Length: 337
Image (cartoon, rainbow, N blue to C red):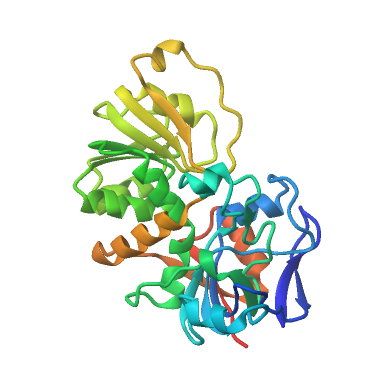
């Protein structure tokens, strides 16, 4: 099968003909139709995340069809009790495996499992014609969306949703960095009646106007203070100095949620900005419950995605344009046999 392979960080992906994977017990063989390109893919390629599997097939926003269900061991039982059947459309996210038995897993925090494996990072992913995935961590996808439309929801949507839920019942919600995840979650926040405040790069008037058209009550640069103090803020940009900026914009008891897997160093800030029970928290990965809740909610909003499509062999072009900030929507690789 064809695949785009990372041999070494800081080097371009290579188009290769590699062996088609075979599913083991509890796994699905999936014929990939679309795979969105995530900022985390850039972090892996740019050597900003440690110890990726090498060589590696990137990609963790995967949409495809089940072609085979693993038949090892007690195969009849496995097939009969699988939530998927041959031909089903399936979504494969970042969280690819956990031990399902540690203290974190047993307490509903499988996203913190010390032995967790991640699609497109420590497990081969979806920049390929086929991939295998643990059926327990795959999702059925809403019929409302095409393969290309739903692919960006599998990371920007899921991680964004977990970040959003950590804000609780915050009425005045700030979002720093108005990229793919922010645009998706802003739609849910507006649907649920929140007041939305959007922070962009200083001087990015076009994006600020887009946010206002979407429904934001205020939009400005990340160097500005909002028109009102915020009850919560989500930071989607991987820029550490935004943390004290967002903290300074919070009302008493507010929360800053850092929604990225990677962020530059956070500079020091006055304790007065943390005082009065303000909170800083991070979001690590996702849980299956996040996915089930999000995919039930997204079609009701309905959450709309913006995409630019690329052929599989154009993955390097998609990554380069992403890195340069030249995309007008989420890059989605379309895979044809």
